[in-house]
Image 1 (cartoon, one colour):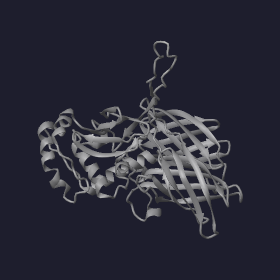
Image 2 (cartoon, rainbow, N blue to C red):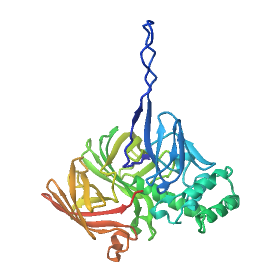
Image 3 (spheres, helix red, strand yellow):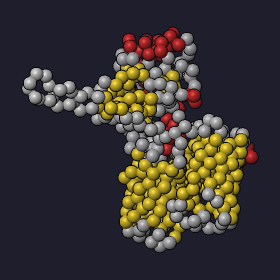
Image 4 (tube, rainbow, N blue to C red):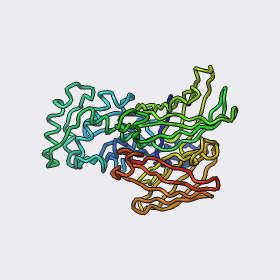
Length: 418
């Protein structure tokens, strides 16, 4: 199944006026106006990359500390470091190395682009973004094109690594292919993480909630204590049959240029697949049940997802001691902003949404909205051993939500989007 990913960055459209003036003399003719050119903004993410060159039509420059670039509608944007082109692709809100190669995170060309960019990071610490120094940008004008499909990539970069060491006065580190893949998948998993609400139709009809987790630790599901990245699960409510169905978690993101996902097999036997288009909308959604020979389509979009979030949280709630239900089971999406205010939304499986607001105080979160009130403990970096049984080594939250129906257990995970 395929899914699409969501980004909290909004596109900026500018109109570049090019019109014509009136005719001269007594000709009485008026020249046709030149059509305007639409220009949009996007962000390059492999962690945020600052200092990456871009060009698209008349739009040229280097990405800023948020990875921002501009591109013209209908014109590919080319990314480069000096004379080294790393790839070209149609513009979009979020561009990552998998978009440049049109493949996935396991392919050598994708991994080598990531390795190259990580090596260029001026402080060798991608957790705070990737920054290419101005000195390296100038030096790179003298470099020759790199073959990112090379099987001897480290040797090919020997001269470039030496140049970077000299102008940055540091020891550049070229990660291994597996390290690059893990880095990229972690970045894309966080971009994709959150709650998506939608509906399905066909030979069965109802509502659908997709939960994408950046990382999940679950010995009961995965059989070991290793956190999995890009985990998907879902809740399904058939309005035709008035039944609630659950989807067990699985490593469901494919980390490819189509941003595909598989949310897993529903307890009825149905499988839901789609694309996370722009990390915001479920596109090309299809479901199929081989046991009952039923099929159909589904659609949905992200709920929550503040563009200025510092921590993105998403989780599950259910009435204590009760089976899943359309009205008392659902998902919650929260965003912690840099002033420790919290905003978000909860949605029941029936599809009812409630806006939430509140605050974070150190390791506690309190939010409320409508008749619901959440009290949560928050482990921002996975170091609170008291939560290991529930959260493992992943960052996340757990607690309760009270509303007129009673007390609900709440549990979820978090990450820090670039």
